Image (cartoon, rainbow, N blue to C red; front, top):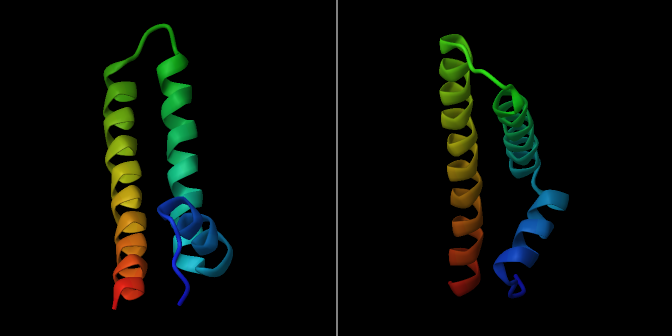
Length: 78
């Protein structure tokens, strides 16, 4: 496997890894939904709860994406 910078690797994974692409899509959707909630002039307790839930899901996606990147980076070193 050729050596990639972290940004190059992310672009490569977007094109070649279905799991990474799916996680990135979910991450973007959660970010969009969070933005919609945060644009409201007043948040209800339900809005705040939903925002918190979405932020946890978004972070979980990011963590899984980073794990995939880390696996590929460690494979480059080996």
